[in-house]
Length: 73
Ligand SMILES: [Zn+2]
Image (cartoon, rainbow, N blue to C red; front, side):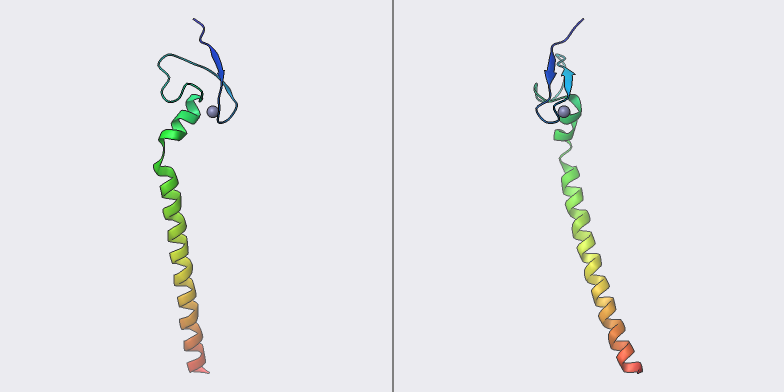
């Protein structure tokens, strides 16, 4: 049984358009999955925010070290 071959609008890959394929008809199964995996983007943003917080802590720690060093010398 042959399904119509479509070209994905996202990644330009050819895929079989099966009647039970979830997502958009012009997107391959992989890109349809990506579309529904919305929280991934949010997680990445949270990771960036965590990184910024880490950088801020790092800067604060360095400032403390400078203060201590100045006091010792
Ligand atoms: Zn695709």
